[in-house]
Structure formats: C-alpha cells, structure tokens
Image 1: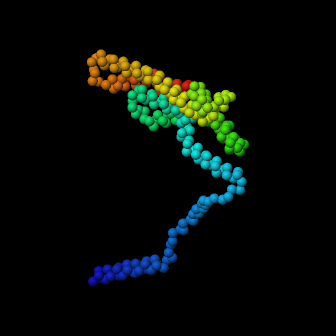
Image 2: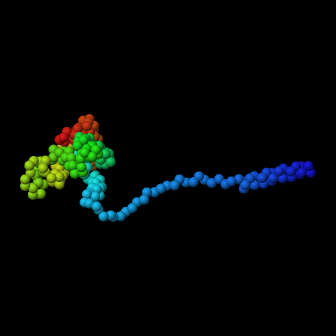
Image 3: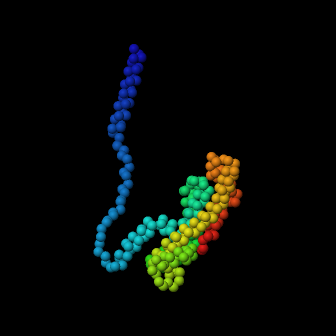
Length: 264
C-alpha cells in the first residue's frame, strides 16, 4: 500500500510539471523568423522614342556592329591569323605518323591555339598600343579605332601572302590601279591570305610526309623479302616511325619550323 501511495504521488507530481510546462508554452510570446530582406529588381523598359538628331542613332548601330564582330570572332581568328597553317601542319604530322587519334584532336587544337597566340603576340601589342589604349582614353574616335586596329593585322597578312594569290583576287575584283600593296582592300586580302596559307601548309606537309614514307617503304620491302605477306606493314613501321620522331626531337623541329616560316 505504501508503494502504491508513493507511485500515485510521483505520477501526480509529473502531471503537475507537465501542466505547468504546457501553460508556460502557451503564455510565452511567439518567436517569428527574421523578415527576409527586400530585393529590388531593376525595371527594364523596351520601347522606341523619336531620335532628336542623326548622331543619336550612331551608338545603337555601333553596338550592333560590335555584337556582330563578337559572333564572328572565331572565324576572324581562324582566317586572319596563323591558325590555318599551324592547324594544317599539325594535322599532316599526325596523319603521316599513322597514330590515328594520338595526340587527340583537342590537344592538337589547343597546341595550335597557343602557338597562334605566341605568333600573333606582336600584332596584339601593336593593336593595344595604337588602337585600344587611345580609344579607352577617348583620344581617338570609333572610325579611327577601327582603322588603327585593322592596320597591324593587315600588315601581318600582307607579309605572309603570296603575290600570285594576291594578284588573282585583285584581277577577279577588277581593280585596275593600286599604288602599293598597302592599298589592297581587306575583302581582297583575306581570301588571298587564306589560299596562300593553305598552299604553304601543303608544302610543309609534303616535307613532313617524306621521312615517314621512306620508313614505310623500307619496312614493306623487308617484309616482302621475308615472305611475310599477311603481316600489315603499317603495324610494323609505326614503332620505328615513333622511335625516329623521338630521336630527332620531332616536335621541337616541327614547331621551330612553323615559327620560322612566318614573316613578322
């Protein structure tokens, strides 16, 4: 009986504590989360207004022209720089070695891109000195900026363009009188430069093919003399071509030849 009485007292005390805690929870002030900061979004208005003068229309057209140039930037990089020759020569080298996808295409394109940056660095410095810095300091206008920015690139293309290719496009454009090479229009110079670069790349590619072709012929003759007609000469000659290329430090020779083939 005493134990039952003690249990009842303990239960009554626990129930009383629970009731007090519930009452305190209801009577305490509620805690709300901190209010979210107000975010003000910019208001965008799209519409048209009447132009006050013709000069006010110049800036939108300049911005449109700049956006068009940015979309054509990859093609400009390919067609007006040394990227054409470098890419084609490296592709010829990989094909001549017969390694198929080694080095991978991404590696070759990355190497060609950085070699192009290296070759075109003097041209970029001239553009920055003569066009970009004066334009940012508001010393020259938009038209002079375009003219001075184009001049170093034109000079590079003219130095590396063959006279025969340049005369072909001048003749097809029916341009009769030109004072000198600097007076050639840009729309005539760019295709002439591209065709000249392709021709030069094929010439370099032919020279690259010769030593590997000799190795293939020697291996084929040895296999025929030994009567091994069922064995592929390409699978046998590839290790010898790789060994030859490593012994002569072929990558350094090819890249050095590419750098020396351009006229600065």
